[in-house]
Image (tube, rainbow, N blue to C red; front, side, top):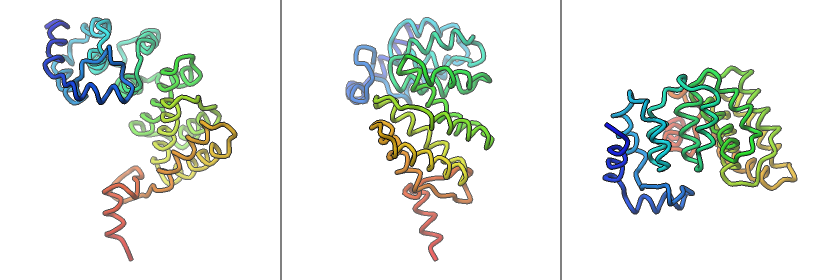
Length: 242
């Protein structure tokens, strides 16, 4: 099996309507075939053990071929320089998030990338740093010290006036707040601090994060906090009314 066959398979799953929808979300039109993430994941499963295809799939420059490349990468098989190289080839927020969640956060040295990318020159490096913070708060068992460390990084950050950065900062703050009641309180304080800022982008992040943080509740069946406005949250509150 070669990459030409994979591209043909992607094209056979393409949808013009889906392509139009993702273009509206900021995915570059010229790079997109128009295949749903679900279908991309199904195709990628067939090639999970064929890591030799990764570079060729990246060089095709199709959005979906890069997604498959990310999904078949073995995180620890790449040097720090190679991880940075692939990040420099990313030009959309969703690829950035997928790369961070599927590859970078699974490495032992993932914190090094957070620390270097948070003040990086590229908008996607910055997005990547906050995507990693959000991912690690979900997939890692963070200690209280680590939660404080990441919250402090967010607190000190001067948010770029760029939507994909603003949303990523808010996302990371929300995810940290869902770890426990204690982390929720700490994230809430950080969000309130942003609202008091004279910088418009900081204020937006604070307000957006608070919308979710103030509605988080703890239910016995879930380890993490959930929104009281979610289906599960509403059911729990309804069943526990006095």
